Amino acid sequence: MSDTSQGKNATFTLTDNRNGKSYELPVMDASVGPSVIDVRKLYAETDCFTYDPGFTSTGSCESKITYIDGDLGVLLYRGIPIQELAEHSDFMEVCYLLLYGELPTAAQKKKFETSITYHTMLHEQLAYFFRGFRRDAHPMAVMCGVVGALSAFYHDSTDINDPHHRMIASYRLIAKMPTIAAWAYKYSLGQPFIYPRNELSYAENFLHMMYSTPCEEYRVSPVLARAMDRILTLHADHEQNASTSTVRLAGSSGANPFACISAGIASLWGPAHGGANEAVLNMLAEIGHKDNIPTFIKKAKDKDDPFRLMGFGHRVYKNMDPRANVMRQSCHEVLAELGIEDEPLLDLAMELERIALEDDYFVQRKLFPNVDFYSGIIFKAMGIPTSMFTVLFAVARTVGWVAQWNEMIEDPSQKIGRPRQLYTGYTERSYVPIDKR
Ligand code: SDX
Image (cartoon, rainbow, N blue to C red):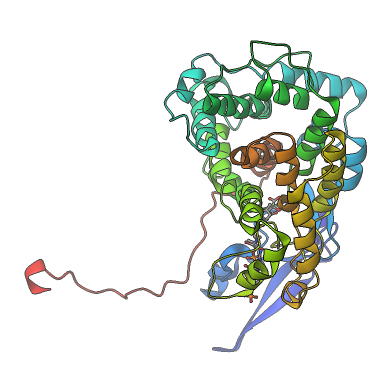
């Protein structure tokens, strides 16, 4: 633990009313945001576990990468506000910032970008992995399988205790995700795989591999490339969310980075997490017209109805997700650039946001639009199929996952993750032979 996290040796006193015993638990201070109560010795001293399903009040690690203030709607990557990075930076620079902790010099950026560019190709054998899937397989299933299979190809970068191996694997994952994602899309269309081109930027290359065909020259729209680059930045990292925690937990056993990222992709797929962007579009299609909004708002509030307003609410943000604001602004820019004057889905989404934010149920629970609420509308306007929305989220989040994975391995206090439980099952009882049951 760094000195700044030790604070002023403050403690929390815990008293067990069952026996009157008191325990002093150290408090560790953050550089910004909540302090933590260090409970590592709690079980040894009290014979009790803490209990926190969903980890609503639990800090699982110390990190210097991303800071979120849910009440103020603040998101910082290595201290820099997401709004400034979305406006002034680009995704390759943000990748460098998340991995190394500082913005790169021009020379560092050029070297990093070149390294990433020269890892974008896939081993030719990997193309055969795609052919094992049905053409209509969900692309997230393909991503889980193909990314996990990278472990079988890169034995030279799976010694997780070697910083050089870790960085090669990190670069390979960041570089190859757009290629794997684009090939999953091409495979679903029955079109040939398009190879990356080294003269294109990261976002341009991704759009090129998604939409180019061998039959004609495909020119990447600079506006769409800029919009894609900004969307990748907005999704790059987000503290200890479900998929990042999955990557950290998988990595804590010493599993290789490709298998860990595959596990992160699987977790991101859930509709409560990264799968929400796809679910938002499906929800908007189901609502169909603004006259139907009250019916769906009612369903969202009905405890007996599993329906949730997709793209709304967040475990941490109890204010507007700052990424949603940037995304809404990008929405208008992309639609204008594409000459799409009338996008009924955007009108419907904005009307849904307006009505929800005036409804006591959402106001009292501080349920605001999150990053997934508008992203799907941009993706749709860019011609990206709904089933590919969460794939794009995974492409962007890979840098966050590998940055957090590296930080976990380099953390001297990290151990294999092994939570305990509150056991309320049977106490010991004897086996009953089947003829006695
Ligand atoms: C992402 O963690 C991250 O950082 C994730 C992410 C990232 O970048 O990695 O930001 C990306 O996953 C964004 C979230 C995308 N998910 C959705 O949009 C799905 C819809 N949202 C909900 O499923 C929900 O809001 C969660 C899962 C996002 C958060 O759930 P929590 O924190 O567990 O909150 P909760 O379920 O305890 O909700 C509190 C109350 C409940 O009502 P009460 O029991 O208090 O009466 O709010 C209600 C919930 O029923 N509620 C909703 C709601 N979200 C919460 N009611 C209707 N619609 C919703 N969307």
